[in-house]
Amino acid sequence: MNIIAWILFGLIVGVIANMVDPAPQRGGIAGAIVLGVVGALLGGFLGSLLLGIGVTGFDLSSMILAILGALLVLFIGRAWRRI
Image (cartoon, rainbow, N blue to C red; front, side, top):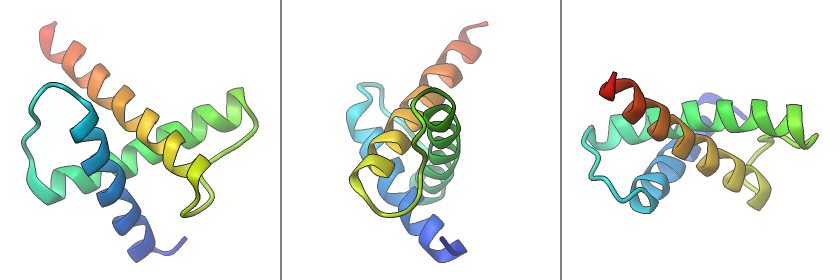
């Protein structure tokens, strides 16, 4: 995917992850994009490592992996702030 597709994908994933997460998130559009892209990278890495599938584009498996990765990023960030 090119950079524009990653930004759009990150925005969609970040917004969905923020809607699923019960804690209110701040950061606006830029925060949602960063969360989505980092979540897609983490979800793709873990998905390819554990399941043999990765984030390959705008399909359902990629979206699910990216959302799970973004939720994991939110969980790690919340745990990090408690320390």
